Structures are given as C-alpha cells and as structure tokens.
Length: 238
Image 1 (cartoon, rainbow, N blue to C red):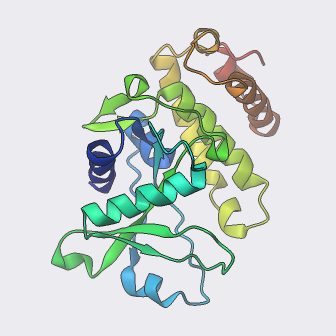
Image 2: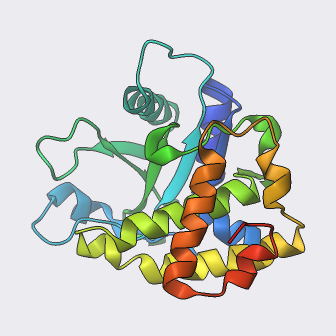
C-alpha cells in the first residue's frame, strides 16, 4: 500500500510524527472501502489542457522535529525530495500553474498490469490548511498505518468540505458529495468510539484556536445539511 510505504519512508528518514488523513484515513476509520484514484503516467507527463486534477489523493500530515528556519511549504518540498531519493517509484512533476513554487509527488503502482499508472501523494505540514500538529503519541494504528486521531480527522474533513463547497474551482466543488459522505460516516463512528468535544476541549495537545475552528465548522455544516443531533451527541455545543 502506497500510504504505508510513504509513512515508512518518512518515519525512517525524517520523523515519527506522521499520519494519514483525508478520505483515505476516513476509509480506514469507518471501513467505507474507498480507494485512491489512479492515473496514467503518460497523462501526467503530457500536462495536457484536459483536467489534470486527481479527485482523490493520499494525504499525509507530517509534524517535523526540525527545519526551524523553513516555512511549512519549504519543509513539505524537502520531505518530497527525501521520499523520491528513498524509493524510485516516487517522482516529482511541476504543477500546471507556472507561478507555483511547489512540485507534485506521485507514486507508480507496482506490477506490470498497472500500465504505468500512479497515485498522487500530498505531503502537508501544519499549519497548512489549518492542520493541527499531530505527534506520534496521538496517532492511531489501523492496518499497520498511522492514522490521524478521529476527532481531528472529523474537524479537518469538515474543513475540507467547507473549502471545497465554497471554491470557484469546479473540480473542488465536485468533491463535496464525497466529503459529506465521509463526515456522516465519521460522525457515526465517533459516537461508537465515545469521542467527546468536551474531552477534546481540555486536551493539551490541541493548539490555540483548533477547538473554536471545530465548533464553527460544525455549525456551518449543520446550517447546510441539518441533523444537529449527530453533532450534539458528541458534545458539540450546537
């Protein structure tokens, strides 16, 4: 699995503070069964005028121990370079925008039947996208993969829903249905796991503003889709 291999490389070469998040993490937590979308390498290499965006990626959050002189984007680029050097299945390609200061990381799928197909791997470093810092002691191991804590994942999936639903980009807005499906599944599983807003509120691991963000996002979601009871049963003050 690409997610496991990517995390293994980061843990061995950079830091143990790494975890899976996004829809792939939601699938592990809730057993949704969704798999990452793949694309042909030749398609990426051509950078044609057709839609180049992958609708579902593997998203990895890294909270580094060092790199104090670099910002989050610079650290992410350093991590991508380390991954490429560690495994030749990974490669970097420039994005479509000529003004972009980052490169896109891909991983080729194993096996001759994959026909050069690959999966996009996003490396994100807090506070990018308002992501929380996640230490190794806070992650949960599911199927041998370090996964973002359930409460944090619920908040960040709701943040993703809001960003996608209010975006001017059609490909982002197309992700809304998947986001909503993930959020409902996470809400149900969070109840089964006895996740509590009140408990998380007093956890020292949360940075300033994260719980306010969680509260605000839950209210926005309920404002669009209703069902406040699903959030209230987790202790959200809605």
